[in-house]
Length: 300
Image 1 (cartoon, rainbow, N blue to C red):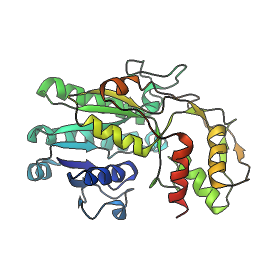
Image 2 (cartoon, rainbow, N blue to C red):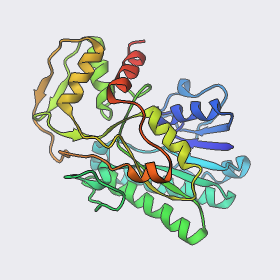
Image 3 (spheres, rainbow, N blue to C red):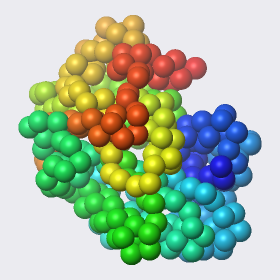
Image 4 (cartoon, rainbow, N blue to C red):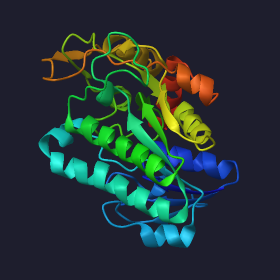
């Protein structure tokens, strides 16, 4: 298979690129390197330093990929609140550029969306038909991009797939950023720093290991379309997560509590039954095992 991965120099994208190459696929990467890293990209993949806010028609016409895994995104919720126009440029207009280029070459698109930011508060595990109540422009932009994928499927007969991710963690996630709490916790524990927990720490999230997410992406490329949740299907509190991070790091450092952040979700958890039934995918990595693998990478 000839695959094109947007955002392929980033955290999830570069792990996907490695898996595609390992199984013998031809892989090209589109990334503007604003957050992705050149060194993340395998030497066996070709990197095209491009921005999805610009047309991708010429590149798609040259490569004619069978499938485009569209992972390039503006993924910081707070940036979306401060700069909703920029967020929409990347996550909506950028997705339209991918769709237009894919339509012209007959390529399938597998789109990385978000569960928590789209469903909002989840009293019970959200399935794909649950009410969508985004609380930030990031979730709204991702939802708009999903609707464009579905429209292109209906209008042009494309076979596009949407995956709504839980909180993805694992090797290559930036420990110095603000988006990935696992990487932040483990990075600070490695450096002997104090980890900050906002509010009482009872906020719950659905954490899923990047290796399992990659397998879901590969499985999605083989189906004719649909929307699928990709998570562990288990709600884990920030306090429980911190204790597990401290366990794998062998640390006795206590966290520091800070005031709760306005607008933060209290509970986000996904029902992944549809992915199991229709993709044949299930998460295989336990939270503790995934944290150990992430710790081994962060301290290397």
